[in-house]
Length: 261
Image 1 (tube, rainbow, N blue to C red):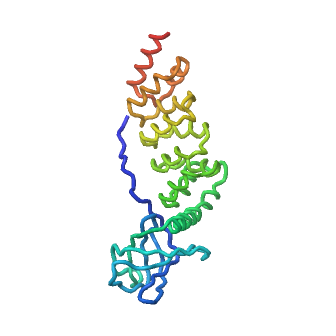
Image 2 (cartoon, one colour):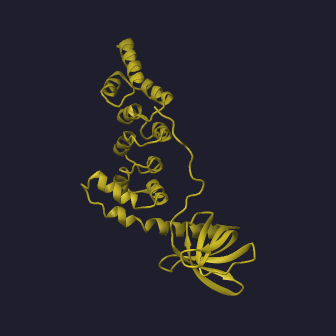
Image 3 (tube, rainbow, N blue to C red):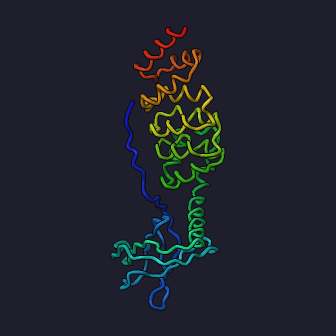
């Protein structure tokens, strides 16, 4: 049993590298938007140092078919040592519903740009090779993709060893019971992910999922005992056969079997 660090990033950032323009005193200055999030972006390029607190700018999709005009507050400005340009950290301000929708579409484009790496994984690829492919994809992209991944993508993502990706996968509305069973057995889960799986009405009656949860080395005692209390004698005997079962829980299960026959 263990305690997990439950801190989550407040605002997921994506390594976008999208084309952008800063509008300053009647002139458009081309640049690139990096570290794109739902609250801001990092603009890099030949941008003048603005004296105003807010600037207008545009973000464009990589194909140029989507352009989003925004207003932003200057949070930080510095020289870019890599190309002698400017680094401008911008916080979005006064986003309208239309602008919010456009930003979501841009983020979707960025995320989908990493899907081909997953699609390239062939059936039968060894887990260690799959993990190499996944590690090449930025963590925020994997987390977001896991939440909405299709069956082919989920088959690849379940080999991820990052706890946040696996928790996002546990929340995927398309997750199948066979996938939930495999996921519940992963030693890389956070205890919170096991709680999510245990509370999901889709598999609350599935003994195999609950056995995997109770046997997981990351499960906390209150959850394990709650799961055990819901299992019948046959399921408890199958649980006892799990080599990863906590010794303390093993004793409690044996006592319960003896008590109830």
